[in-house]
Length: 288
Image 1: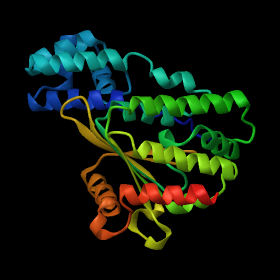
Image 2: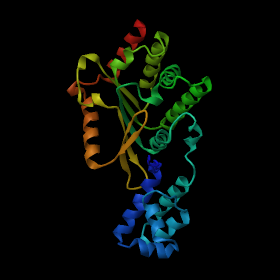
Image 3: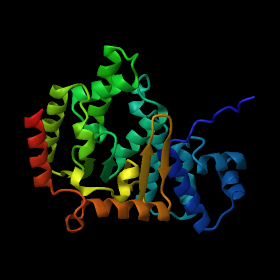
Image 4: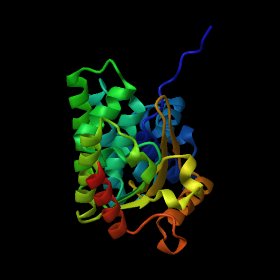
């Protein structure tokens, strides 16, 4: 008999629970003691601290008072509790994206800065509408036109959520030579990426075919930097068609940040500069 798959805890709720647990441990206070103050079961405290259960803002206020938390952080945590109690606004796209994708998109929108490296296709929010439709149709052949348009809309919402944030993307040139959707679609993608390079706070660097093998070639990943609440944390997201990984251990962060630094460091000669990347996109577009 197959086991029932438990839904993964939303990262933003898990993050709040971890912070509340850290504050309790600093006092220190037992979970039984805070449960008594709140008038709830000890097991409920455990569910709150692991993100398996949403928490009432009023409970957060009592916890913060018991833990001696500053007024400023208390306000921040209470607001965070209010937000985690509200359904992810991106869940309206659950008809075209799975829960992991939507959870990541919410985290992506809350971080202060984002780094991304792709091997199979460019970073989703940076893709052109025609390319999005073509790549989605290839992955989901039964998609209707409405499904494709909804997926484009989701990508555009993600881009809008990143509009005022630094975003640094590395693209492997090899993916730009695959005729996804035909020559016109790929030409449009190249021009679209050129336009993004010219935007403030946005960087695109391309790893040319001449670079040969490099450390990050085996996996696409994203690094969301400085995710609230305080103390802000960083998160690595690795997404595949059927599963997504969320990693934030010190070892993982150190490894993936080092790989990204190797890619974008012009002295190491892996990825091209922004200017050279723009010029490469121009040549590719003209040859399509």
